[in-house]
Length: 173
Image 1 (cartoon, rainbow, N blue to C red):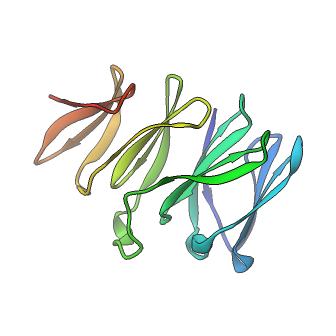
Image 2 (image 1 turned 30 degrees about the horizontal axis):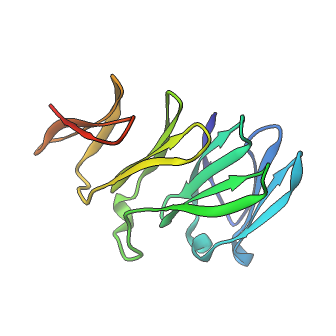
Image 3 (image 1 turned 90 degrees about the horizontal axis):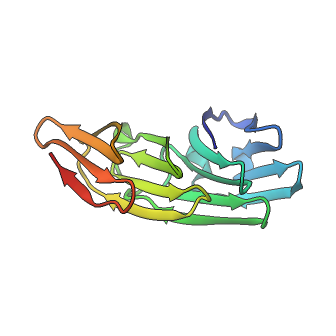
């Protein structure tokens, strides 16, 4: 898997791997994904005006890509092999949320990855399928890392706890 963060000015071409590049044209609200092994996939985004920072995870085995932007409401999935581009998960956000709290990142785990954001955590298998999604509205809950098969969080008020990477069940310490 390849993980990355992208800063996107008004027009950008970003190379994710030797096979994949992303072309962002925010003025036409178009995102083009080019693959050496497949035709270009063009995606239209309602929220592309606000895309400035994007996180992605590219699965080399399945030639698929999962991504979201810092202020977006959705996680997207693209399969270059099957020429599919779709929304796969709605984030626990509203359009009028305070953007000062927004944060996103992918973290590699055995057999997949997790997507951590300010109001939840999503676990994906190594093909990019959603395994589970836990949502919360506590912006003071801080993701601290992976320990013994759990995505660990802590906060000053609630202490330390984790979510099982297998099924998302909560472990309180």
